[in-house]
Image 1 (cartoon, rainbow, N blue to C red):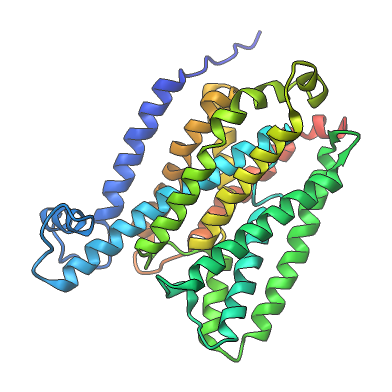
Image 2 (tube, rainbow, N blue to C red):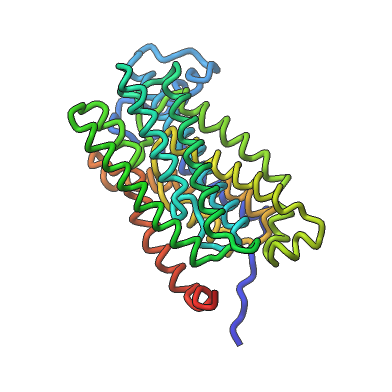
Length: 359
């Protein structure tokens, strides 16, 4: 007989994740291309950034401290948003293969952001990836959210038959949408080749970017994440009932239409704000909820809050590891996560092959 491994209590797992996140954050703050900033100056510079201390005498060192702090805060917010989005989507569709990247939600958000970049660029304002105020970032975020929500609703309509989501159809629609959106993004980038600044801004969305962030980016991702988190108390228990099927959940008094709408809107918002500040970072929403589910159990009442800790650990840890190992040969975060997440997705497909064949 095979012993079933005991699951870790959610509170204990949360404690481990907090410790890991703290270690990754401190490590990321101390790693950079400049060795001029000591730990004491770094701490003072970070506190000065949020108004809790006097700025450093050297403006250059103060700027370095600010950029490192914004990078860490953006990484935490983006990781939490993508993991939460994946947890909600997997709960709604009742399948561990669902995630913002697999279903095309992040690609759709990236397409919306790229269209917004071209729209504002046509009016004479480009390099939007580096803008920190005004209408341009707000337009990018709005366009990313609208596109992400549109893709989510389209997938839901196509893959749902008789109130039941067809998993093979869901995956095939995601593959098709990713291919079409990828072609559209390539076409936009081809049209923008004559403008090197515009092309660089658009390509950034394809591979992701965590460096050179600002207070604006931190505000966007954290406000969007906070709004998405509002959905947790209204959907967590109901998503547990979804596991037995929508019909059974409806028989238990769950307003399935309302729950699906809230969960899909929150998942789209979380994915959209993440893409709008750093571009595409794939597979975070796939890997994190699945691993946490194995460690602590399937209950969404603990899974969704744990995603808010596990996502930042993965994103910040992967970014820190490649900065330590590669140094100046920096790889975009989207590339790193694709290298890690691609094989993991294949593993999930092979692991669930029998259940998929039964659909």
